[in-house]
Each structure stands twice: as C-alpha cells, then as structure tokens.
Length: 494
Image (tube, rainbow, N blue to C red; front, side, top):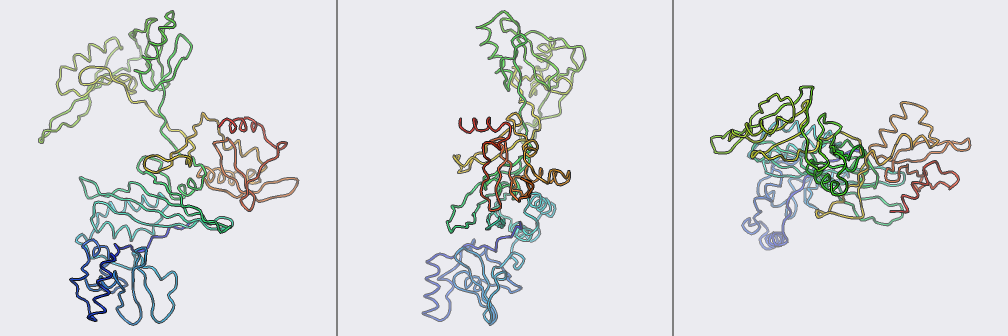
C-alpha cells in the first residue's frame, strides 16, 4: 500500500466563462479579460508557479478556460475533474508525468510561512494514520493559504489475489477559532472494489472521525470498508452493581438509576437491605429495607471533600480554579461539610473522593448529582453494519466486547496453521488479524500443505477461511470444531 497525493485541484471555469473565452478567441484573435474574468476563488486555486514557470492573470485564465502553452515543448490544461495536467507537445506524455503535483507548484499567498510546530504535528498525525509523508507538500501549500477550512486528497491501491482495490481519501482540516493551529477533524474514505468478472461495484463511502483516541488508520479504513473486523482499544464505562441482600439484581451506570431500581425492588421485597458497589470504588452505598440510604463509616481515613471554586475574569466570565481538599472521617459527616462549603458563593461543586476515586458529587446548590461513570481500557472488535445508515449517511459500527466471547488465539489454535508453530510468526499473524487484514497462511491437511487466506470473524466467534482464489472455504459438518454448533444456533437466531 502506498498513499499517493492527489494532483493539484482547481475551481473549474463555468460554461459561460468558457463560451465567452472561446468567442473572444474567434472574434478578435486576442483575449479581452473583462469578458471572462476569473473569480477570486478561482484565481487563488491556481498556482502562481508551475514547473518553475510564472503565471500571470492572463496565463491563469488560459489554463482554466482553454490551455496554457508557455513554449513549444509543453502545454498545461485542466481536465474534467478539475486537476491540472501537463502535455508534452513533441513526444508522448508518460502517465506518471501527466498530472501536476504539489511538489511541482507554488502558490502566491499572503501568508508564506505556516506555523512550523503545527505543520510538524500534522505531518506526524498523517504518518501515524498511515498516510506517510507524500502529502507533506500539499499540506504545506494548504496551510500557507490560511483558510479556515481545507481538504487534502489522496489515493491508495490495495492488491488482492486477482485484482486491485482503490481507496480515495478526502482529509478534512479546520483552523482553531482561537489560535493559528489547524486540526485534522476526520477523513472520508471511498472504496472502489476491483472486479474479476467485469461487474462494476458501487463505491462504498464512510467518514471516520478523529481525535477520539485509537483513531482508524488508512489501512484499517480499507479493511472495514471491505467488510472485515478490526480490534481497537476502547474506553468502557464501568457499571455499578445493585444487590438485594447477597443477590445481584441489576447493573447500572449511575447512582440515581441504582436508587430507582432499589425503590422498585422495595415494593416487591422489603425484608432485606440493599447495596450498590463498583469494583473501582472502595466505598459502597448501603440502603435499608425501605430504600433509605444508610450512613457509611470507614476506618482507612482516605476520604476527602474536594471543594471546587470559580473566579470572575475581567470580561465577566467565570473560570474554574484548583480544588481545595478537606479530610473527613466518614460519610456521615458529608451533609454538614457540604452545607458549610456551600456558604462560599463561588462554589462550583463539592466532590467526595475515596483513595482519589470520586464517590459522591454535589452541585453549586448542594444537591447530589450523578457522577460520570469511570472507565477502563478494553480491547474490542468493531465492524461496519452495512445494513443501515445513520443521518449523516455513515454505516454504524457493530461492537463486540470481551464478554461476547470471541477469542482470536483460541480460534486460530483450532486450525492446522503451520505458522502457529513459530512464536514470532504467530505473533505477526495475530497482530495482522487484529488490524483487520486478510492474511495468507499455510494449513496442513492429509500430509499436504495448502495456501489459504484467513480473517478474524468475531461476530460468529470464529475465523473466515478462503482458498487461493478468495472463495470461502466451507467446512463439512464432520470436520467442524467444538463450539461450531453454538455459532450455528447464533446465526439462525439473527
């Protein structure tokens, strides 16, 4: 896979402009610029220098509406897609030299030096996402323009066994409202699948949001658009467990939900007490058989009340300040402490923490409010759900958590894959499959070796196997491994 920067794209001339241009040529033999004046945006989109040749306004009009021929050797024109092309007049133009790239041009811009630190940061971002360094020249040119928003185009070719798939990317940048920094917000990936039968596939498009942690890379986007699954790290909210006596009756995200669940249970059984626990909270919340909360006493002296304030700035707005910590002996003292701290009119909130973990929170009016659920990092599998689209035209993600029960390494061990006998090759195979790749492996059957392709299939808790021509391999019933019946039942229930 190689990311290729799209050629220089310009804002095309309108049919009216082109008609006036043609009429001027035919009638006068020379051009009257007031008849086909380019818009400011059109002119700005055209480079001021191409192949070290300087273009004036007249040259830019020629290029956009007809052709720019600076000498007897070469001519430049804009194709139907808005890309600048070069054509050598005395010889055939090589395919790789046909398009004008950003390395071949310069733009006449008011802002000549972009924020270098921001430029380097964006280059690192593109490299991390798998777009390499081939977009650097285009990125620098767009940063120099100083516009609030801009896009970069790129393409990548992915070789399959019998054909080639092409993914076209549109990377979308925007400028900060408060600084000169730019950010890459998201990118659109459009997959054009190759065909061995002559049948044309409809392009598949998806916008991938960024800056949310564990961003989807260019290659992972291709794998998802190809229908495969990838594994990513995700922040999973921790649930609270609600107990009636020693029996767990519910899992919820918030204390308010836990209290509501307890009140429901009280109507059915008021002969026991209730507890709300979370594995990352050392303080539990206890309730009596009528659903009233009981005070909790702790002996480890790790409870604190954090008093968060805000201060007024010169423009009248308020900004938060660092919280002041107060040691407390047990939760019985919380109501009195909160009431006392609320006397300060600059109070934003009071948060009770145990060993640094928030366990209670009170707003500026002294009312207890829900804490945001704590989170944990977990490996999850995701794939695109091609059966539906959201309001933005995107396919939603299907997510398979660890509790779903798919174990990639175990699924691999059920197959006679030769690479599994080498620890280093096994690790590479696991890593490749987790990124959603279709991986070539060697299987051993009846004393013979056979090359096949394998992909992770977490939805059905197994692997997808394909022969050398990428045709699915369907195992015979007698050859099925343990647990396949459960997979069949799962598929039938869908």
